[in-house]
Length: 451
Image 1 (cartoon, rainbow, N blue to C red):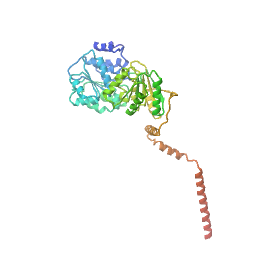
Image 2: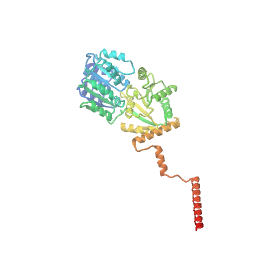
Image 3: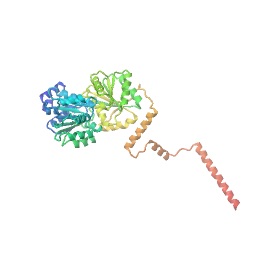
Image 4: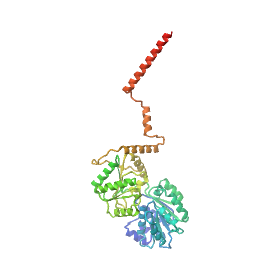
């Protein structure tokens, strides 16, 4: 099949050619006809398989041309970065039409966004928080909404957007088409599907392949954070194919520390991206990264779903994610647009638990690599060992609620296994027995005297 078979308009087909799309991906091939027919759709497909174009193209076809000032289609996404990515896709695909697209995101001033909406808009791509801000300010009128999209629905549920979504659903016309897309289908998404969709057509592409085949996945077992830094430096210094690299860390502080460490070691230019960074700083970093001006970005999961750079060669998980679906989206930043990619995860003793859960999710074992011999292995500090012990206790308690912790286990073990007799205990025992014998003899003598 080619895009010409999908009943798209000529301006859209020209935009597809301009973007270099050869033929529709499986999700596009199955979803576009259903959306054009007006059905509610639940689309589940691995990251990097073309989900954005799968819903943007038919929405633009149904909108057809600019009409009035009020929006007729809404797309909600969980992060600012993803909003920018979807918006750029929508602009590129609608460039031969007169349709007006607009993005509403936090981190930038509201006034310019208000002016853009008031000038007239057909399609809005937004994060729920900023959208509600402008709606409550009386800027957005929703009577003409015909299509509503939730993209990356699993992340929206994890990030606690349901209360905001419920408020939005209260003010949008009931008679509308609903589209829900996600890379994973966990219970929260299933619950949302029941509330949000009406007799949906479910399209699930390669359900057994949560991560695309073009991504090679590996794990290094690393004892602690300092050794992880040594391994990271070794890979970047000695492997020439690490050209455009995304490093994911669990916390903002860790991301900042890694980015400063790498810049000090002169292994290319690195930028840090996390929630404490301003929106313009984040967008500039993405631009420099996509254009190859910097070697890599160190980010928290705020970037896991917002980067669409086809040439990312490596994704490195400095910390294994504790939200296991985030692994899918981190890894999905490489192996895009039919390019091959590599995903590497550094796993400490305390993260073995998480990597097993991730393997269950992606339904495959991740290959373990040996640490290079030249990597210096640093001893864990006392504080780190204690933190590891507490976390391992927490993990065991999660699996077995009756588990009371390492301290109680040791106490129980001591009870079941009596101590070996030491010299002191033997001497004390002899002393006690001798004293008791003396007392017995004295009592016997007293009895004889009485008689």
